[in-house]
Image (cartoon, rainbow, N blue to C red):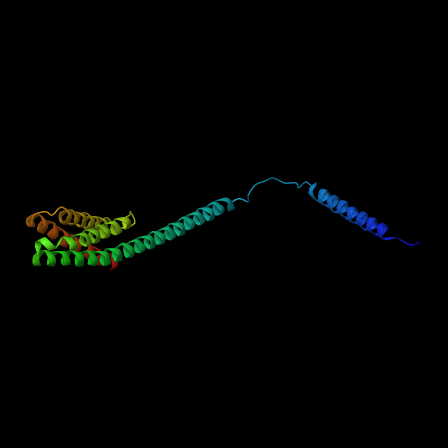
Length: 192
């Protein structure tokens, strides 16, 4: 007797179905066995197990705390480096622009107006850049020193833009110089 293609496919399908039913029957039979006995730990092993679990939890907590401390230190280091580099470069540009303004003012008080705008812009830009880097990741004394620079830079920009009298302008410049020195000293200390 010859078996056609359709018959062979039906025969394979029937064999597959029979195999699946047999496998399910084995699972059902295997899972229906009931084990006798009482659910209890051997005497003396329960305290050892509890101590093992407790030690594992303590070790896990210590490891997690150490990883978090390392992460926080890394965040602080990055914040210090970024903000201090910004402070250093932008304050140098701002001071250079102010010095150009002062030189022009000393040479010709009436002709210094063209140098006032760049000085004001450089001071405000430095203040904006440094201010944008201020965060809780920075040590408090460094954050305070950088904030002092921001405030002093804005005060000098206001003095130049407002054409303040020489006495007021010089007082603002003195605060700016002090703020710059303090901020850069704190930056240096933070890198050590």
